[in-house]
Image (cartoon, rainbow over all chains, first blue to last red; front, side, top):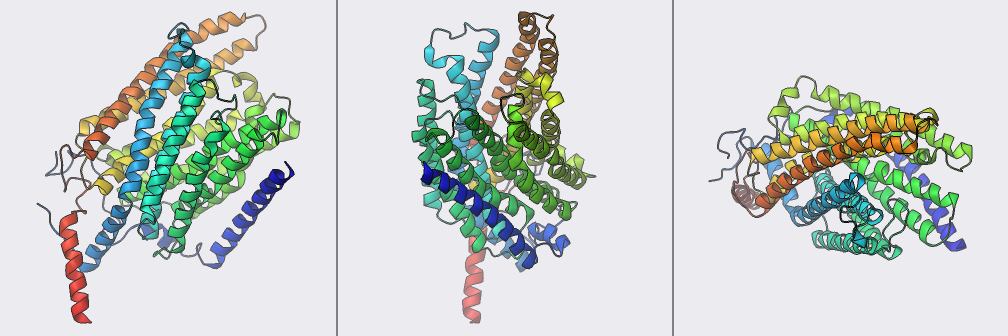
Amino acid sequence: MFLISMIIWATALLAAVMTVWALTWAIKRGEFRNLRKGAASIFDAGEPIGRQTDYFPSARKGSR
Amino acid sequence: MTQVPEGPAESRLEQISRILIDDSSRVPVLIWFTSSVVWLLLGSLAAMISSLKLHNPDFLGGIEWLTFGRIRPVHLDIVFFGWSSMAAVGALLWLQARLCHVRLPWPLLLSGLAIVWNVGVVVGSVAVLAGHGSSIEYLEFPAYCAPFFAVPALGVLAANIKMYLTKNSEHTYVSQWYLLAATVWLPVLYVTAMLCTYFGLVQGVSQAITNWWFGHNALGLWVTPIAVATAYYLIPKVTGRPVHSYHLSLLGFWTLAIFYNWAGTHHLTGGPLPAWTITVGVVGSMMMFIPVITVAINHHMTMRGVFHMLKTSPTLRFTVFGSVMYTVASFQGSLEALRSHQEITHFTQYTIGHAHLGLYGFFSMIMFGAMYYIFPRVTNNEWSSARLIKVHFWGSAIGVLSYGIGLCWAGWWQGVMMNDPSIPFLQTVEYVKPYLILRSVSGMGMTIAHIAFAISVWRILSRHHFVMSGPTLFTTQRPAWKEFVNEQNEREEMAQ
C-alpha cells in the first residue's frame, strides 16, 4: 500500500516537473517565435496554401 | 492510369515523402481504425438495447446478461475503450508521423498492440455482461483487464516520443503539443486510477473523487486533445488556409493542460465531499472557458469566407460540425459545473444529453472527419459513394442534435419538477417518457449512419470500386511516384 502510494506521488511529481521542463525547453528552443511560419508549417510546395485537399467522391472529374 | 504529379521537382519530392510516410502507417492505422469501426457498431447495438429498456422495461427482460445494469456499462466502455480510444490512436499515429515528417516506427509492434487492446475490450465486455463488472463509471472492466490497455498505451507513448525525437521538421505544430500530451496523460491517468481503485488505496468518498478525476480527465485529457489536434490539422489543411491565430492556438493548449485536470469533482456536487474539493472543480471548469474560446475563435475564423467548402469536402463537413459542438458542449459543461445549475440538472437526463453532445457531437464527428481524410491516403483507394457519406453525416448530425437537445430540455424540466415537493415523483417519470422514446429514435438515426459508414469502410478496404486517382487522391498516385523516386535515386548516384 505504501509503495503504491509512493509510486503515484512520484508519478504526479514527475508529470508536473516534465510539464514545466517541456514549457521551458520549448521557449528556449524558439518554438513560440515566428508563429506565422509555424502556422504555415503544415503546407508545402506539394500541398500549398490555397489548395483544397479533400472532396466528395463525385465532386471532381474522373471519379465515381 | 496513373501519372507523375505535375510541378517542380521540389513539389514532387515533398509529395513523395508524404506518401511514403502515409504508406509506413498503413497497417497499424488500418487495424486501429477498422477495430474502432467494429466497436462503433457493437457500441450502437448496446446503446439501442439500453435506450429501449428505458421506456419499455420488459424488453429482453428475461435475459440477465442484458439487464440495464450490465448492458449500459458495456455500451459506455465499448464506446470509450473500443470506438473512441482506438479511433484516437489511429488518428494520432498517422498525424504525428505526418507532422514529424518521419515514417511510423515499429509498425508490427503497434499493430500487435491494437490486437492486445481489442482483446482487452472483448474480455472486459464479456466480464461486465457476466456480472463481474464494478460500479465505478468508466472503470467497470475488472482489474485483470488493465494490462490490456496500460501496455498498449505505453507502447503508443514510446512510438510518439520516438517520432518526435527523430523528426525532420523544424517547428512543433500546435497539434503535436496536444498529441504528445495526450499520450503522456493517458497512462498516468489510467494506471493511477486502477491502482487506487482496485488495490484498496482509496475507499468511500475518496474513491468517488478518484473515479471522477479519471472519468472526467479520460475525456478531457485523452480523447479531447486528440480531437482538437486533428481539427487543428484538418481544417487548415483541407481549406488550404493557415490557422487564424497561431498565438491563440498555443494559449489554448497550455491553458487546457493547466486547468482541465482540476475540473472532475464537479460531477460530485451535492455529494458528501469537503466543500473545497467541489469548489476546485467549479473553478477549474470556469477556467476552461479560456481554451475553449481560443479554439472556437480559431476554427471559426479559419473557416470564415470558405464555408462553401462544406458542400464539397466530407472531411471538412464532419470536422467543422465537431468543432462547433466542442464549443457548445464545453460552454454547457462549464456552466453545468455551477452549484446553482447542478441543483436542477444533477441526476436528470440533462447530463446524458450533455455527454452525448460532447463525446459524439464533438469527438466522434471529428474522428469521422479524420477517417474520411486518412482512409484514402493509407489505402490508396477512393471512397465508393458520396451518397453513403451523406447518409452518414445527416444521420449522425440530426441524430445527435435531436438526442442532445431533447434530453437537455427534458432533463432541465425533470430537475425543476423534482425540486418541487408538491409534484409526485411518478409524474416526473411520465413527463420524461416521450423524450426517452425520442432518444431511441435519435439513436436509431445514428445507428443507421454508422452502418452506412461501416459499408463505406468495408468497400474501401475490400477495393470495391477501386479508384486510384479520385478526388482526394489527385496528388497521390503511387506506382508512378515510385518510378519517380527510383529515377531521382539513380540521378543522385550518377551525379556522385
